[in-house]
Picture 1 (cartoon, rainbow, N blue to C red):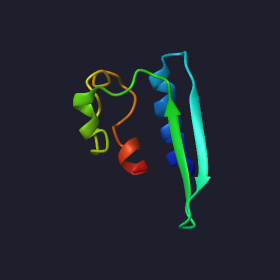
Picture 2 (cartoon, helix red, strand yellow):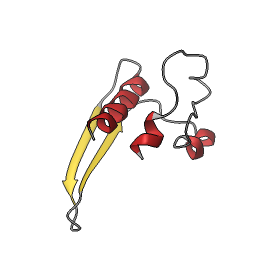
Picture 3 (cartoon, rainbow, N blue to C red):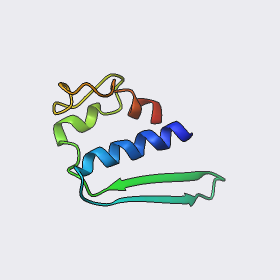
Picture 4 (cartoon, helix red, strand yellow):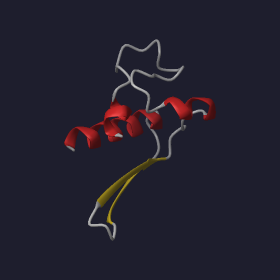
Length: 78
């Protein structure tokens, strides 16, 4: 669980490019579940890439040439 939250927060931080806001919502549903929502005010994911972000090893067009990351954070978090 800790690694999932770290992955989501790191993704949110990278989306901000240094400025913006990250908001974390924790809430309990009626099904005895606890939900964690992470939102950021960053640049967002381009529409044409949104369908792929949970695919293992997928890295967006802007991240392909960067050394950091394997494209596994969101699939593991899902």
